[in-house]
Image (cartoon, rainbow, N blue to C red; front, side):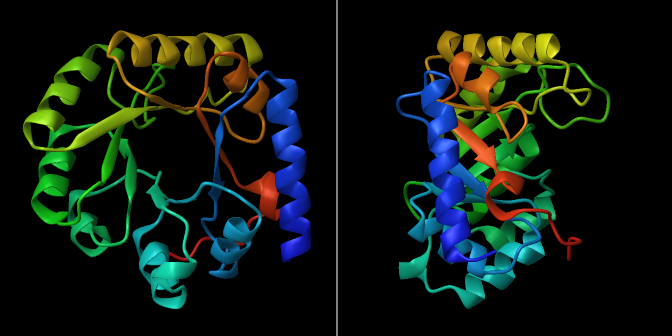
Amino acid sequence: MDQRSVSEAVAALRNRITLAGGTDVALVAVTKTFGSDAWRFAKAAGCQAVGENYAQEVVQKAGEVALSDRLPVHFIGQLQSNKIKQLADIVDVWQSIDRLSLLTEIAKRVTQAGVEVMLQVNVTAEDGKGGCTPAEVGELTRAARDLGLTVSGLMAVGPTNEDPIETRSAFRTLRALVNEHGLQQCSMGMTGDLEIAVEEGSTMVRVGSALFGNRPSPHR
């Protein structure tokens, strides 16, 4: 991984998005398990944000990359309430919020203005997958706003089996929920299902391996 390869990969991804009909789709570079250079490369290549899954990695990379050299940091992994305090001054967008206790803790710990929350929705009804149910979106959105948080949109992960028909159905459900609740951002689509996501109205895709190659083992 180097700057040239990442920049070329970003150009290829932009082309895939365009061919799928996307005109204003943000690219979140999923930098989990990669070193802090991935943050720098992603910014120089024109990505809109970096996405991280593990609290310890976020803290480590934030200590290695100056604030002026960073893209907005999105937390996209399953989140525990006890991790929020150490992440509160680093994370700009919390994409994987699926319960009231997390909203309450973020409202308590985050002090800077402009922090966004996105609700993760389990649109595939798979056991063990993170996310609230579609029926809970309205209640959690209202709760977040009552706590003074900005809910910018919804996020989802496609089906584990990667079946294209099931993927399209899941993404269509998420887009309908975004529209129903008057939200702006629809975060769906990764390396393998990016085209389907864009066709179904994604405004934000989360891509890692297509940018940086095979992942090293995670260090939590």
